[in-house]
Image (tube, rainbow, N blue to C red; front, side, top):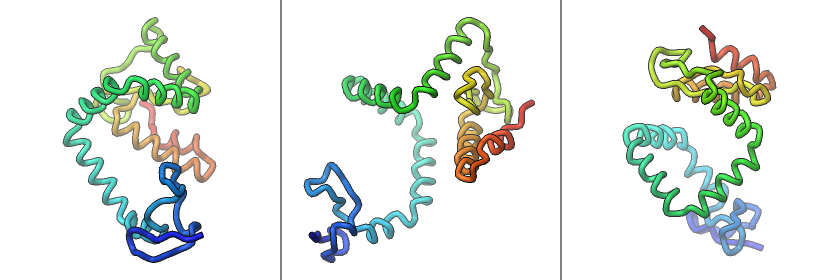
Length: 167
């Protein structure tokens, strides 16, 4: 079977289109080549999105709260899907929450990597839920990115240890 790309107008085999379950024929409207051209500058797009989010974080937060209030069913479904997909993460976060409430863990006032920003708990290993490092949002993103980059190279724990010097 074949399909016409809505971007370049060429008729191509269905295999030349990404799968898309929401589409009536189960395929994307743009061919893989057109999508590749479109997303070639995606690093720039991600940088712009990140900049927009930083500049409009209050507006984005309000929008997210409104969406969650307006769509409680979808919110419950999304939350349930997350809990099903990442049970170890959920368990670790709950353990930190309860340890803080009980006074076993005390949240410091500053990040352990930089003296700026309000810290949040970073788990190097979710199987050890109370073994955490307190990092601000920016340092947390850096630590997670280095973890993901190194996990592709199979030495993930070493990458996180390198990225997070403890004081």
